Structures are given as C-alpha cells and as structure tokens.
Length: 116
Length: 113
Image (cartoon, rainbow over all chains, first blue to last red; front, side, top):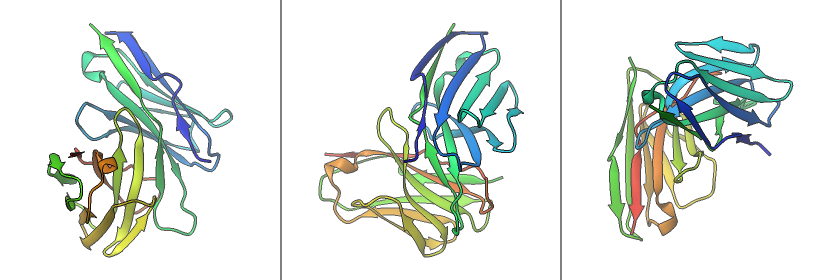
C-alpha cells in the first residue's frame, strides 16, 4: 500500500540550533514531495517542495534532502526560532496515471517544539 | 495572489442534522480543488477532489458528498451527520499542472453532539 511515515513524532530543540525532521515514503512511483507546516488551529502551510529528479533544494533557512535509494526525505531548519514551533508534515505526490490530478499522501506529522 | 476561504471556522451540530461547508478560491482559474479531513493528532485524509465544474471524485466511502457548482467554489455536504463525522475539515486548491503544491484554507472545526 501507499504510506508516508515520520520517524520522530516529537522533536524538541533549543532556540538557535538546527532542526532535522525525517520522513520515509514507500511508493517508488512518487515523483514530487512537499513539506508543510501546520500551526495549531490553522491549515497546513507550504514550506518547500522537491521533484524526484533532484536530491537537494534550499529555501530561506530550510533545506529539503531527498534520497530515492532509501526512500527518505528530510527537512532541515537552520537557526530554529520559537516561531518554527508547529507540526510538520511531509507529503508525497503519486502521479495519477490517465487522470488530470495528482494525489497527495500525508504522513502523520512531527511536532517541533522550540525551547527558548 | 491567490487566496482560499473556508467557512465557518467552527461548527457544532447535532447528530442527524445536515451539513454544508463552503470553500472558495480567488485569484486563479480552473484550479483543482480538494476536501480533506484531519483527525486530532493525525495526518490528512483526502475525501474528495475535483478537476472541474460538476466533476467530483470520491476517495473514501462515507456519509459526505461534495459539489462544485462554480469553477472556484467547492462545497462539502451531508444529509444526516454522524458522530464519526466530527473532525477538522480542510479545503485546498492547486494549479492543474503536474507536480504542483496544494494550498490549504484554515479549516472548519466540526463537532457533532
């Protein structure tokens, strides 16, 4: 079946440290991956994405790494701030063969708690 | 820029009552539209998606239905709510092209009593 899982349900880091959130995916046909941040009571917010023809992509303070050999995705947050505290979801995009849309399969999320 | 609106933000309904949740998107045309449900402390479960007016695909059998009467309007409905319909409902949109992120509204917290 299709599944996306996270290794650590809760990650606690000190303010200023770097954070690494990990995600495993199981569908080798997945061609696109997204990280979302969800604050309490709000909808998920797009952070960064990466296509399967890349192994690294950088944004502002965030880096996503993709290892297709072991089907692993990670999100690195540099100099973590209190405002980074949230639940982080990875999602894999499975091509909808013959269809007009793609499906996102979400992991269960990792809670990032930033300690001042 | 594109925006997505969901309402109401919270809703408390008795068992057996009907439901209508609305979602509208602004600033884009012909989007794909999605309804998700999120249980507490869990990931997102795709309920419905739509690639055009009147075109609805259901992902899981359930007590809910969806409709898309206009290009940028997506409605989630039920004729009779069950206790198990409680949850956090999220609407999302994406561009039609492949490998596009979905963008979410702020959700509706639905409690069934």
